[in-house]
Image (cartoon, rainbow, N blue to C red; front, side):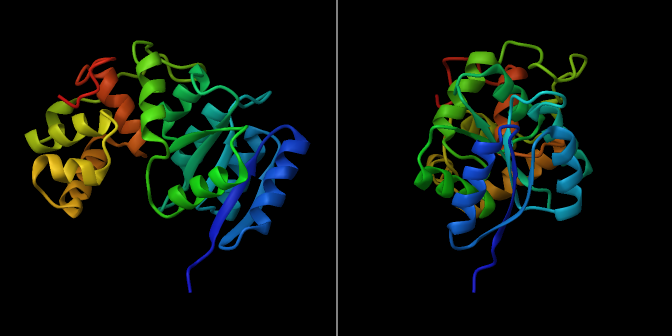
Length: 231
C-alpha cells in the first residue's frame, strides 16, 4: 500500500484555498494536513503537521511566500517538505526568489486539476523539479539579479570549488534542464550515479532542491542565460 502524500495548502484567498483543499481531498493518495491563510500561519502549521508537500501562494500580505518557504525549510526536520509555489505569472520575480530560497518548483494557478495533482505527486514522490524547462526559463530571466524580492540581499553564491569535476559537469547539465535519465545517457553513467553526484553537490553547497541548484549554476556563472549548459 502506497503511503499518502501529506499536503499543506497556503493561500490568502479563501475561495482559492478552499478549491485546492477540496480537489486534493478528493484525490486518492493525498491527505490535506492543514491550510493556512498567510506566511506566519504556514510556518507554524508546517512545523506542527510535517507535510511532505507545501502548496505555497507566493504573493501574500505580511510574510510572503519567499520568506515562508525559507523559514519552513530552515526549521524543518529531515526529511524537509518540498515546496511547490503557486503563481499567476510564470515569469515572476517572486517565484525566482522562492526557488532561490529552496522551493522545488512552481505551478500556475490556472493549471487544470490533472496538472496540479501530477505536480503534487511528482514532488511528493521525490522528483525535485516539476516542469524543468519552464523553471530554467524563469531562472534565466532573473539570474542576473543579486536577489529576488524578500531575499537576503547580502547573500553570496556558494563556492563551486568544493565540487569535483564530475559534480560540476552534472550541475551544468541540470541547469540546462536535462533530466537524470538525459544526464546518464549524455555521460554514459547510470541514473543512480547521477543522483549520487547531485545529492553530494546539494550537500556540499547546502542546497534544498534541484531548482535551487539551477539558480546557483546561473548565479555563479557556471552557465549563462541563453547557453543552458547543454553544450
